[in-house]
Length: 206
Image (tube, rainbow, N blue to C red; front, side, top):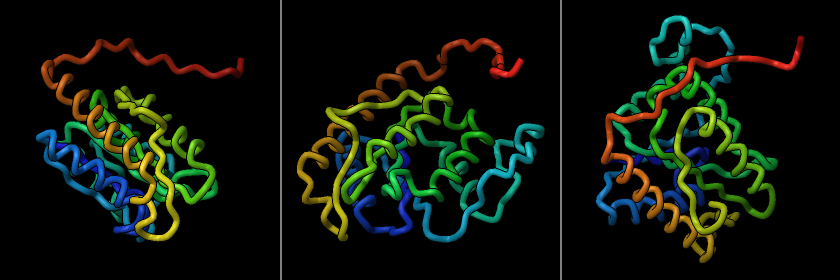
């Protein structure tokens, strides 16, 4: 079984990568294959609300000039996901959010009913808000969210400092064990997903 770890930091080998790597060690010990996907530091688009993906059902974003569709392709054969992000102004990295919104909208069936979790790295404050922001789209897309002994937050500023956060790294390891347990448990019934009612969309304007 395979877990895809998405590094949402523009720094490929910074503190976010260190936190994800700690989880990857545990996942490999649990018998999982782990692949890393780096968002990188090249420009990415936000969703333009063109609706092309919804009309065609192609499970791809209409714009193919950044890494969004590469992430969808990498997610196809993943059994679970672990996202990592730095905290910028109390929020996840904007590039990660832009890509995440597009891939979940364009290719929701690729992600639905697969376990997921996120790890947030911060210098000091804003991490809980970023953590909540990351989890909200997962809950909209029928993705079971794995938990840990605490919120999945690791503290560090300069490269390497995250590894000095003993509690944070322990939280990440506990998360990895729980993600492995959840993924393995759900795999015992790989062809069973809950029935869904037709989606009713309403708003508060009458």
